[in-house]
Length: 187
Image 1: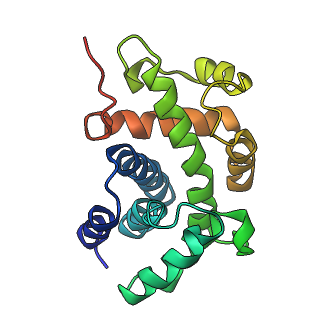
Image 2: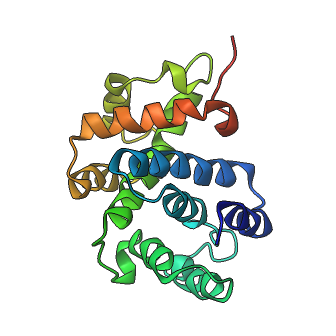
């Protein structure tokens, strides 16, 4: 499967622009980590793109991502990618073992949180987001309350990186694709 084929699956199953951008943000972070580790960037990109492809079809847990996995298998998505997608949800029982699985888990909730942090900046730009402001917002349980703070913290720990370094790394990855993510902001 190529990245373009994965994007076609996203476009087929996901109508929400916000969800598509979330998947693109996770992809951006995943690719940056793959590049840093010398891993296969396309595999990481496809995993990031497809991790929530079935959310609109299966919005209830545990249907997502469990039922989506069968769809991906039928579409020819590799077992490695399908396993990573299953592992990003703790309730599936698929333990995160590979670097890619841990990276997906670490980037998923954080990328959504960084998007929310961008939206409350005056310019609505990821370029105005910094680690200090993100850490402050993480303490505010009313802000972006759907984001699981434990997953953000545990994701960095499972990845074996300092939380502040992880936040900064993902901010930069999203800045590099700010226009595509709708986070370039206004002047």
